Length: 421
Image 1 (cartoon, helix red, strand yellow):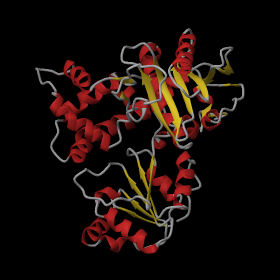
Image 2 (image 1 turned 120 degrees about the vertical axis):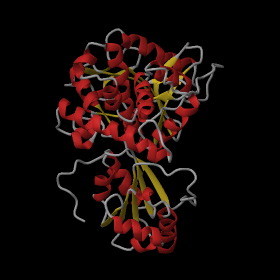
Image 3 (image 1 turned 30 degrees about the horizontal axis):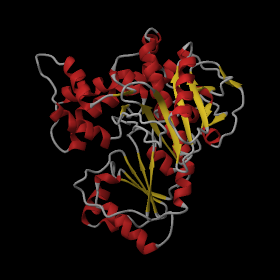
Image 4 (image 1 turned 90 degrees about the vertical axis):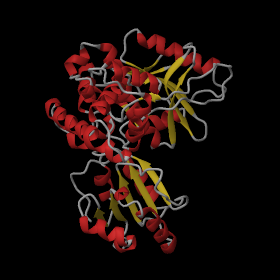
């Protein structure tokens, strides 16, 4: 297969190339329309598309080995439609004893009742999210997350994005199919995307009939509480406030909705940081609720750019969602994970913590700008100086402002439109 000359390079391309050079199979997981198949095609020599090829599905159901033969790397797209492929691929990797044999892509995680033998030592898993501002060409990436983790000083620079530009990027999102599209065109796409989730995908992912109206109310409540660490009970309560005629949603009913949305990778929660602390502070354990792309939350709340610019509180939370999406992708490229920090009593909270496997960490606050920057800097310094045993590689405030610079207290101010991997 020839690479597509119009293809826009993703951060996942390097991760995929590296993994194919070491392991026999690579799994790319992510929500649908995030670009998994197109990225895999740039590296594959042959392909089987299970969502389109009925004959291939039949062959795989009879004997999965029938569709594994072909030039390698061989792409098995939407493999989870035929879950028995997992063990067939594992056996083929064992028999061939060569790296780079298969790329499996999937937009839903198989249910737990499907038996799969361990892929340890054979499979690498890459999580693909929608495109970052850097991948879309809206950030120049002059401030590298990897360099920050290494303790390097970022260059001073100026960002050309303002709050209106960020509001548009929030509403349009990071979907590869929306590159160059207008806000109106994006609205049509995202509404259709959400309709498919509500009316079809959640039911398929959960394996049983679900009420589309309740799924939509649950998703809208989730959007309204985006970037907040709230319990499932709070989500259910918020969804119930939207119910008509007393048709409320119970926690018992909501749990399968949430699990299905996790399998579809539509929700993308941030876990609480479990650091080695110098204090005895009790930390929150509830995940911070986020959808995989801020455009979904904006659409569920009927927010266009103008409405967001008139409601800076909502814009602030969705800007944090935008920043979190990008930071997670950049962190993945640097073998790091993303968390948040919040003490139960509310004494101290920090929006994001990026931690590399060797323990190097960054504290990140996400603020639109203005007088919030001083408060954010104070929180970061307090975390680093009084709570965590290991010093931070850097303390960073990601903003919607114009300039990148280092404050007198050492905290870095970095416009999101300058951040890259």
